[in-house]
Structures are given as structure tokens and as C-alpha cells.
Image 1 (cartoon, one colour):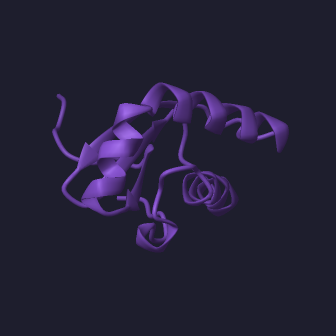
Image 2 (cartoon, one colour):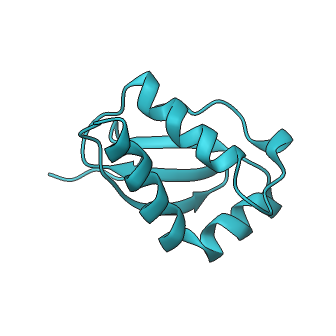
Length: 94
């Protein structure tokens, strides 16, 4: 049986609508760069894709992310070009 809705392998990052549009436009690049960052810290988390939600963006991963992994993803998004870093909130699990 499958259910719809968020699950624990998703990281929800609240951001503004303007930031959502920019992130979704360049989602492939974001996923690639986040994967490289997580590999560099020897994490076994692999982000699969990014999608938008009414709350912000959702990064879906292969495993449940640890707080340090979520912090790495948040830092990358906050430091990205064209993103208003003041509108990026703390990531959370559903």
C-alpha cells in the first residue's frame, strides 16, 4: 500500500517563492553540487531530486538525513548565487 504525502527521506527547506523559482530552474545543478559536497564530507546520503512545495523546496534523498547533512544542504542553498539568503530557513524533516 502506498501513501501520498511527505516521508522521512525528504528534507523540507522553507524558502520564498522567488527562491523556489530559481532553485527549480537550476535543480539539476543544485543536486549535482549538493552530491559533491556530501561526498566530500564522506556522507552516505545521496539527494535524488528537488521539487517545490507550498512551504518551500523538498530535497528527496536515499536515506534519512542527519542534522549535519541537512546543515550542509542548507549552507549550499544559502550561499548559492541569485538566492536571497535571508529567505532560507532551517531545514526540517516531515
